[in-house]
Length: 409
Image (cartoon, rainbow, N blue to C red; front, side):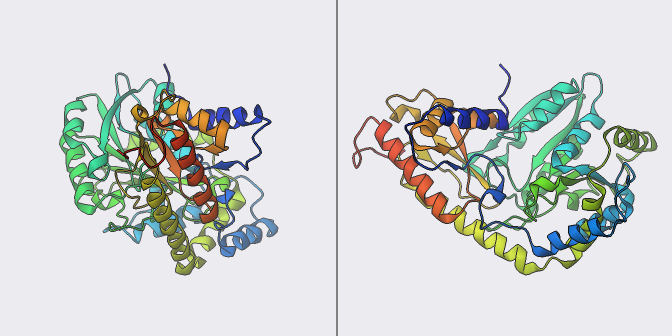
């Protein structure tokens, strides 16, 4: 059975609400990682003004180079180089239609007969979908919930073989809300070097870290092992609909960047094209003029929301959050179905929750963990509080024991 897609499952959950005319509660979705659904999350006026400026200039209505507009590549090169011990070149940067296309490029460019790729569980299912299209075998390694969702490096050692081409590292984490330490990222790089594989560093939530670990880009270890850095404006600037992402070869020793690979990359971009030119052209102004106050405010809101979420979950029977979120916008929560009298699994839980309480959560099976759920905490505090209160009522109603008697696992 194929793993269901996030959008597919959320669509079915929303459709189930349409069939229920008796439930008049407002729908609150904590399933999709789109912060723009809530008014407390809004991009900076600098970004909006930059796009308007490039659009009305009439200078960017034509095609851009398929690898991206030169000024866009240069701006992202400078932006990423600020956090690295070496300087990238604009030629290392390729502009993509969001991070999803960057994922497609990364997997496709590494595809070869009998190739396999190591993917985290839980993880982001787009990797599996792209790998299936490219006939690349997927091998899952576990993330350890009781250890801050760190990579099980022993499992990586056991899975890797001569046909392994890459390991995927998502940091800050989706769907777990983890942020890896410098020490752990170094261990991952050392493991990748040992197996002579590339690291695909999915950093779409880059810099959205508000816990004890600061965000460390995987490219810091590019001198040790080739790193393909994937990112976008979508989360940090709160503009997911703009579809402006990047694929970057952080490989100062040119281990990965041989002439054949670079030529293949350029040909691939000739096929898939680049995002809207006027959005690309706005990137230098967006990066240069966005103030730290905007970023600090976003982190403050996310931290407060994650604190509310973690605290509320502690009071909900049948749900356990093993690790407090440290970054991104999502968190994984364990569902103890043995404490519930009429809930079969996480999918059953989420569909009945939607029907009875008009609350949308993502079943964990969608991201690789059965009987878990993913909660997006990037929401208005009042909405988040109300949603989790309804989840609490639902859990009490479906538990074997009455409120006040059930022992929280």
